Amino acid sequence: MNTRSKYKTKQREILLGYLETVPGVHITASDVCEYFKAQGAKIGQSTVYRQLESLVDEGIINKYIIDGNSPACFEYMGADSHEEAEVCFHCKCEKCGKLIHLHCDELEDIRVHLEQEHHFKMDPLRTVFYGLCDQCS
Amino acid sequence: MNTRSKYKTKQREILLGYLETVPGVHITASDVCEYFKAQGAKIGQSTVYRQLESLVDEGIINKYIIDGNSPACFEYMGADSHEEAEVCFHCKCEKCGKLIHLHCDELEDIRVHLEQEHHFKMDPLRTVFYGLCDQCS
DNA sequence: TTGCGTGCAAAGGTTTTGCATGGCA
DNA sequence: TGCCATGCAAAACCTTTGCACGCAA
Image (cartoon, rainbow over all chains, first blue to last red; front, side, top):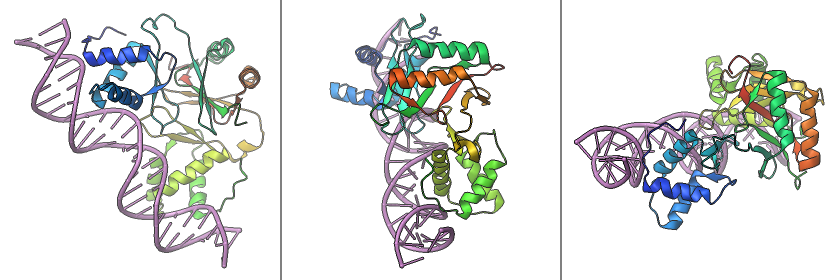
């Protein structure tokens, strides 16, 4: 998975450094671009997209597609994430659009249940629970 | 949910008539446009998008986003899906696109769990489990 | 030196929107 | 008649791509 040859460029270092400061937070590509701009670092958006894609391939960050029109979200998983890191589930409020991420054993159970009883390998990265959040319901 | 006032326009009727002929098949917005073109019916793409959105709101069709860049898929769920019928969960295979309908108590439990423990009112009509089906995994 | 990474600009494709017109109730 | 739906075109949006240059190893 991370056998691909990788140069250690300045851009990659800055990006990784930033992501490490926001673990468990959802970041969009344009968030990253704006952070770079605020830092005075001039980095093309193509580079941002390409680096993010690489980091996803390497398993260092995860990519979430919450809904088709809003931009994809990325989340730092830690450099050691290939070691069975904690899985995260997502709930999206249909009214206010808030995104909630849950770390919950009970939800983990249903993944096992789906696989064992229904032979369906659920992908937590892609699955989003839609509904109404606390305030909106 | 389906209290919204709705005119019964010709375009809506044709669209619904088409969708009913392809239950369990995933259709894109441009598929619909091409179907209309083949039928000789001149219907703007804005109308297609707006009608599809309405039908999703009414629970008559479901919308699936397989990946952020390819177009969204729609699927006919049946006109009676809003009648508190049996609650049905959906699993979508990311590889072959197959859609699986599940009636399962254990899945029903997580809905209760999400509401009681996490104060999140999950919407089963909208929520789709993404992953790999039996054959594809 | 090799060839991957970068940056800019432009393209790509899907979906949304503004506004005048048409059609349902 | 009142209001919603339609249609056209243009815009918006995120993301990808082509190509020349720069930089890591």
